[in-house]
Length: 310
Image 1 (cartoon, rainbow, N blue to C red):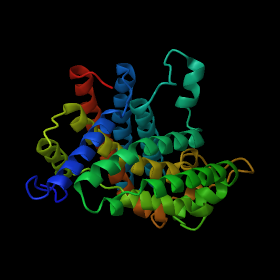
Image 2 (cartoon, rainbow, N blue to C red; image 1 turned 60 degrees about the horizontal axis):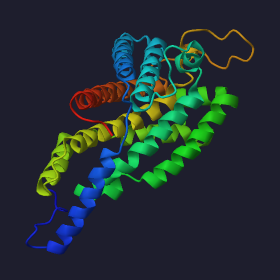
Image 3 (cartoon, helix red, strand yellow; image 1 turned 180 degrees about the vertical axis):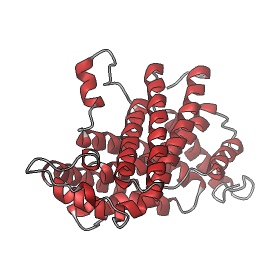
């Protein structure tokens, strides 16, 4: 049992305070909303299946030293995973019957919008993830700092969008060589996010469930959403990092430079490139992110069938 859940007889005042806090957090967790449109959720699953295939292709191509194409397929996997997250978490602006509105959703050249959506979703998920951690762990402040992270993400989003719009050569080179000081530190931020993303261990799940049982707040919806929130937190950290690192490795990995303002060198994707050296680690993170999202969606689908979603 977590240390923060004290025995009722030893510390009744502290126990009551913690119980009240827990009740508030349970209601807060239950208020967390996701897309209730089953068609959107089904499409999210389809995107994840395709993203998983791209991740597998990236791994195989890397093992056969086809480095540029390995990067391309990881970029494709991240792009599809980002679309799946958008469909799962919101999707209200996506109308499958309106070809004009679908155009931006389908196109690759939507880096600023993609990053904006991911950061917005992170802003929704992070405070809830922190509350779950803070209730049952003593070191939650060392694990999650939503206020600081949120401000950093706003700054990074602005810097990344500016670099993508007007400094493509610098961003392409910095992301290929993992130069952490270029482009106002956005490469460093992306690498930190990928490094710091932590899996939602089942032990944490069980701690939250034990806490619910101690306080006799048996609420399946709160338990399910707590598990979904943990997995979204992990996936968002991974995908924000991959979105920044791989945004300029789509056409750049498949075509030689033709126009005078083409900034890339398709021959630069070699075994010596820092991005290639780390690619195996990034593929593993991407695969785990997809796995966790698929699990989160399966939990949510059960909720849609069995409970009234708030």
